[in-house]
Length: 296
Image (cartoon, rainbow, N blue to C red; front, top):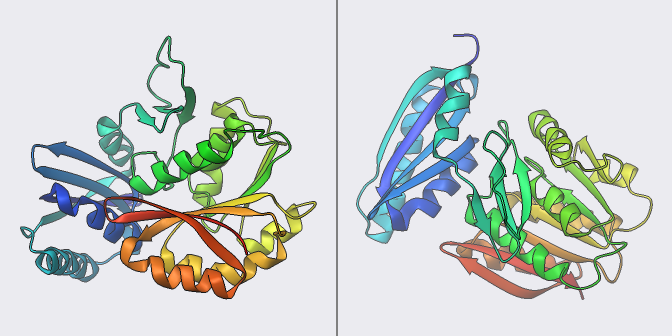
């Protein structure tokens, strides 16, 4: 099939779902969702067919088996099959419902009616094939950290979103009061999804500029050093990016970093310290953590 996707389903103990999410994200999956029943969790994820062969999927299943054995949990059942693009688009959305995040946010799928009478900030979201639905712990931690940052005098705050995915963090920052957001992602499909979500949330596109690329692209976009940055991607990518941030920040710049497993926090923190940053706080949820950082 010309536009086929691998549908990967992992049935595991709920204590293993964070690791399963991480494995699937690292494998390159998009549109990840989960469904919990009792002590079991079914994690569903989707990957373009051309990005993985059967041997790759078998290796993924073996890694998940090893993950479970390492922590003494039941071995997960990993299954996969090919579906066409239309079936993919409807499959994972069935399990995604409005999600309260932190004290202020409500993430509402674009295809569902907006809830009436809510006193929360409603983020309407159509993630497409980009990462970031608000369902994962790392995204939730970042949104909650943004709430804290913007709880007092958010006016005239300019931030950068490195690896913006669906644009959920950028949209959240704008709705909290950021005056300007510059968002970049190396995946053109993420850029497309972010621009669609700007329109969905009635945001002035001049306040949220999105482009394909990374830090070098940000250098061409910003008018002056930024006030804050958010980065919710894999830990090893963050470690590579940290030295590059010097070109776009100032002495008072703060940062919110996630996509980091607890066991990966130390090498990230060490690299931050080597490049003039301090970890001001570490928030954790399950096996994941979020680093709130500032310049040293």
